[in-house]
Image (cartoon, rainbow over all chains, first blue to last red; front, side, top):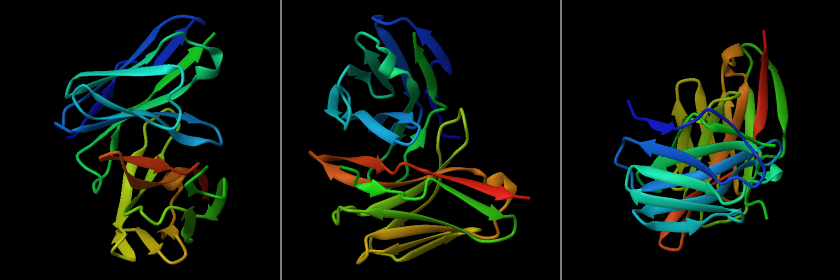
Length: 112
Length: 114
């Protein structure tokens, strides 16, 4: 059974903190993605990666960075958390562009 | 600029009837489309997909139709069941800078009434 695992289901962080969200996949997928989901805005792409150490900006990269040191792990970093980064964060992976992406269970981040 | 649009934020349907969820897109270069279902506090789960070379794909109670000339796709669920109540996202796969990415719509909340 394929699996994408996000390290935390719920997180509460303070404004200004550096936050790490971790995602691991066990499917040997090349491609990994970070999205955030907000009411009325759907899923918006933050960053994606098509290979180890490779990354591409998505539609809303400001305030975020990513790290992919190993194929199975893709980390999202909030350099200095702000309240407008309170959201549901979703990690996904896929084999290629003509197959489905598999999602993790999501991390609900609250920045206070 | 929203390249994938779901213009109906919500939809209510009686159990046993057909649910039709719609999605429009603007980029004619999209070549693969997907539908996902999402329950609260969970990640989206894949439902069904369609390649741009097809106009219909069916999987059990779920059928996706693609009208490329209108840049429109729809998901039909028949018969609808209370367990189908969730938020549904359509997505398109787009080639970008030597790789690809998935672009999602804003979602439609389906409520199936018992």
